[in-house]
Amino acid sequence: MIRPMPFSATLRRRSAALVTAASAALLLALPARVSAQTDYYNTDGGRPLQVEDAYATERYSFELHLAPLRLERTQGAVYNWAAEPKIEFGILPRTQIELGLPLAYVDQPRLGRHVAGAAGLELSVLHNLNTETETLPAFAVVGDVLAPAGGLGPDRAYASVKGIATRTYSWLRFHLNGQYTFSDRSRGSATAATSASAGIVELSRWWAGVAVDKTFPLRSMLIGAETYARQPIVPGQPVQWNAGVGVRYQLAPQFALDGGVGARLSGDDRSWYFTVGTAYAFGLRSLMSVPRAR
Image 1 (cartoon, one colour):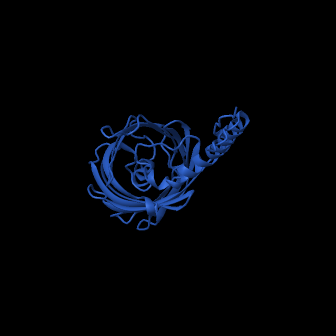
Image 2: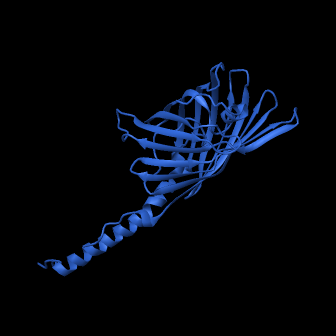
C-alpha cells in the first residue's frame, strides 16, 4: 500500500505564511468594499426618512453625502429649499462622527423676496450600544450640536440627544426614534428659527417617530415609510404630524441614491416635500490595522 508523503516542516511554514498573506490582503480590500456594497441598507436622518436605524458607519469608513436636496412647499406658496452636505466617519467600533453644513433658500414669490445662506454648522456623534439579538433590539444614542454659522444660523448653539431602537425580522425592519433639544428658542432671526424646520435640520423642542422598511438584497434596494410628530421650538406652536415614504438604491459598489416624498398633515402650515440625494462610501487602507505574518 502506498502511503501519502507527509508535509515537511518547511512546507507547513510556507503554507501558513501564504495563508496569512492572503488573509492580510483580504483585510485590506474587504472593509471598504463590504460596507459600500451594503450602504443601501443603512439609513441616516433625512436620507431618505427622518427616522433612522441604530447602526453606525463601519470603523475606518467614510461616507460623503453629496448635495442632498430637499424642497418643501407650504400652503402660503412659500418654497423652502435646503441642502446639507456632510461627511461621516467610523471613528471607533460601532461609533461614528458626522459633520454637516446646512444650507437654506426660502422663496416667497407672492411677496417678491427670498433669503438664502448657511443655516448653522452641525456636529453629531452616534454610538451603537449593542448587537441586535433574537430577543433584544439594537439601541443607539446620538448627541448633536447645531452651532451658529451663516446668515440663517441660530444665534447660539442648540444641543440635543436622541435615542434609537431597531428591530429586524426576515420580512421587515422597525425603527423607533425620539429626540429632545435642550436649548431655548433662538433670540435671533425668526426666519432662521422657522425655515430650518422646513429643511434637513429640524429645530424642534422634541420629536418622536416610527418607521418600517423592507430590503431587497438581490436588487440592492430598500423602501420604507414613516410617521413622526414634532413640537416646534418656537413657543405656542401646535404639535405637527408628518408622514413620508422613501427608497434607497445602490447604484454602484460605492454609490447610493435615495429619494422620498412626504407631507405635514397637521398645523397651520401644512405642506408637502420632496428629497433626493447621493452618498459615496470609501475607506482608507492606511487607517486599517493588518496583522503581521510570523
